[in-house]
Length: 465
Image (cartoon, rainbow, N blue to C red; front, side, top):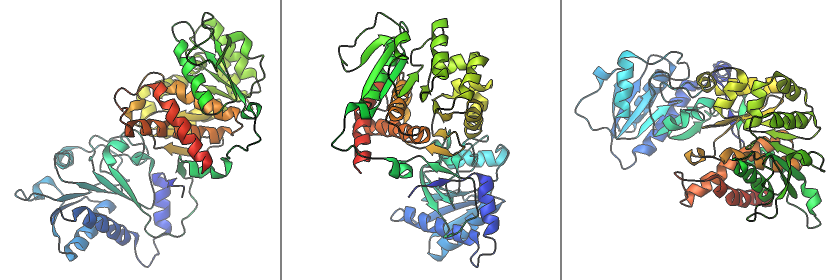
């Protein structure tokens, strides 16, 4: 089942609507957390430290303490560092200090308590969200608990999934608290194939390459030819029928290792019969690059804008306006620094609220946006939003974005909608990296070209299913 993701304001509305339930939500949350805690303690010992803060999260924690005591665990309940017994070796620490309502940095005694929690060798179970983590942004507010497990209530929150969230949450479990009906909320979704199951179709036997679409990759200035080749190779292996490489480096006419790619002068490709364009990998920032980008933006073809195409748009108001006027699907793929340039902000401000930044980009450019990074944020042109949880640190390597751009361009050429291509392509890219790590190739030292074969394998598996 597709998994929704809720902002904290929506969670509060759901909690208010459920206030009249015969079994209060706090009791249900405490019971769900106690059940998981008991599972984590199985065969590990009986000593449990439950840390309860001053708000609702602390109320949940006190219920957990009571229910574990009823199951004959030896439970100590504390609210400060001074209250923790000094001579006990803990088998589990339950973090119920601060929940989704935390709005300022953790300081003073609570900061010391968080540091103490993070120094423990036993499992740490966070209630709803690790204390100190912003539920909407994944930003650490001064200090944050590094939990081995998190049980989050009602539904997932963006802060668990993006920026610093995945490094602090450990294994996440969702306790829906048996809410069968919830008020309308503007939630997002975890990016996954199940969202677009009806759009995925295996190819019929009566199929030819013209039905798979033609895509052009424009880029590859001198010294950066590999970027365009990586994008082209990814587009080819994900199923485009024909792939043209419009090289700005005119000396690059063919790659003997990939003879299926058709090399052309960059100026020639826009005159070809195309279904989609990728522009930006290795494009450079010169006058010729600017002219080519303007021509792409003026075309009626769906396109992917990556790398230097984004930097040119950030520099040139006319290009930004041309992008915003486009009717065809436009996909933009910035990393945080590129997003900052496009928004005339600092990278730190973009990272402080990745969802807000991606929404602003989508609105400004009238585009489908993937803001890359840990827990990539995806915003469709119509406002639908998603968080992608596939991928790993191996993606922090040169050329990975070029492969993603090629995958997205290939899906557009195969007539997938911009939103479908955005979500499936980004998720596929991360899944390929995860497969590489499972096979022992990374995360350290994983190279962009290694993603293409596993991405093809996964894509075929999805289509076959």
